[in-house]
Structure formats: C-alpha cells, structure tokens
Image 1 (cartoon, rainbow, N blue to C red):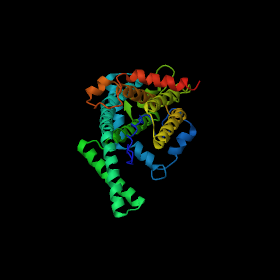
Image 2: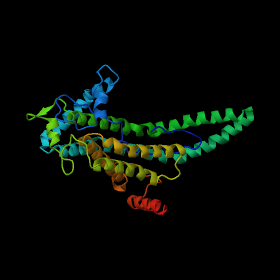
Image 3: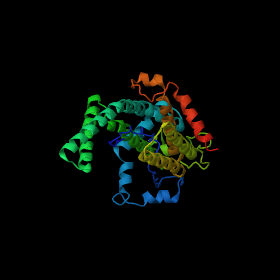
Image 4: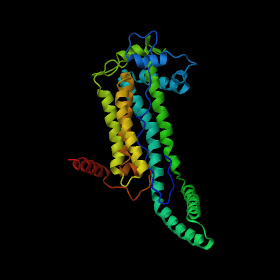
Length: 337
C-alpha cells in the first residue's frame, strides 16, 4: 500500500489479507432455472436491466474474458480430478492461492522487510537534514513555513533515492492486492454464472444441475443459500482472525492505520450477511479463500519459511512468532475481564 512520507516515516501496515473481501455479487435468474435459490431482490436487481442499461456493467463483467477463463479453470479441474463440485472448488482455490497469491505475499513481505530495514538510515538522514535546513533558514531568513516545505521536499527526494537504491519502493508491496482482488471477483462471478443456470454443460448435464447435487454435509445443494448460516459466519470469523493477527502485532499504529483496521473489521462483519445471500458455491469459495489466506499469513511468520523465501531479517522479527501471537491474543482478551 502507498506510504506517506512525513518528518517521522512509519513503515506501512502490511496489506491485510483482502482476498476474502469484496463487493456483493448480485445473482441473475435465467429462464431455464429449475427453481429460485436466491432472494427476489438479488435476482431482479440485475435480470431486469437490459445490457445497455444501468446494470450493463455487471452483465459485461459476467461475460468477460477473465470470468470465462475462471469458468474454464473450474470445469477443467472438475473434469480432470473427477471430484464432486465441492471438492473441485476447494482444490481450485488451494491451487490458485498456492501458485499465485503465496509467491506474491512472500514478495510483499520481502519488500516490507527491506523498507523496515531502511528506517534507521532514513531517521538519521532526517535528523541531519533538519539541522542543515535550520542553519540555512537562519542564514537566509526563511519563515518557518518555507523551512518546513524545503525540508519535506528534500527528504522526499532523499528517501525516494534510497528506495531506488535498494529496489524496494513501498508501492511494489501492493501488487498482491491488485492481483488478489480481481481474481477473487472473477472466480466469484464464474461460480455465480454456474449456480444461476449459465449456458455450460458437461457430460450432458448442465453445471447448475451438477452443483445442485455437488455439495456435502449441511449444504448438499451448492446453488441454494446456506440456511444454517454456518458458511457465512465462518467467512466473517476467519476474516476477523486475519485482521486481528496484524492488529495484535502492531504497536504504536498511526491514526490512519487504526482507522483502516476498524474499517476492515467492519467489512469482515458485513461479509456475513452478504455471504448469506449468495449461493453456497460462492460462500464455500469465499470460506476456502479466507482459510487459505489465514494459513498463508501464519506460514509467512515462520522464520524458516521466511529464510527460504530470502526475506531479509528485521529488528521486529521474532524467533517464536506463534508463541508471541498467542500471548498477544491472550493478553488482549484477558485485559477486558
């Protein structure tokens, strides 16, 4: 994420696992659908709009090349493995998270570690620059405002040169977000197309019909809503766990970082009712994606794995990250009693 440079630069908050967060996907009912598995408001909001109308953007997304590619990937995984659809969704999610987002998350931590290691040098430069600007301002009779603007302008340039020197501009740490969120959206829309009767067939049966019997446990019908709310609540709980993992380890967060943390917590809670209004196939994908995100975040705390990924050591690194995490969690909740 983008970082703001100020007199006292603070390392950016690592990008919170957002892969399980996103906009509500409004389903469309087609004429060939055997029954309405979704709320009337969710279906009519899109199906009643012509392609050129206000809802044309969603229809364009639902038929776009990336969504068609996601559909092809799901069909290929289902055909190649012979697994039921719940297993195919689980396997595809694990494969995408492992092959795409895990390397990007490791790269994100690599960049953030290098940025963190630059902080002592940046602080030293800022201290000396402040002294030099103060001397020059006294000699030339600058006002406090002019001296301040001059100081910030030079500091930004010097810090930018450090980022270029070490090839670790903080913006590079946002590449995970720009890949993960679109992938999450495309997969969700592809599953929505399958669940609402999209024109796909396999072995003589429509994918919608296969999804209707491709579930397991309490959600045997993947085209229907999860009436038990187990999947939606699980999605929200895991997302909150991901947020708290970062919040517990962050000491002295800036006001902006604190607001962002509260915002992501609110979105995580909001995902619960949203996940309750989409087909179980989508809710299952969101749950699998969130669980993989939580697992990857835990894995990237491992000193051995970080060493394997050649992530530089930082002053804040711990030799017992999991013990420290549980200790922080215990301290947070015990203090409320």
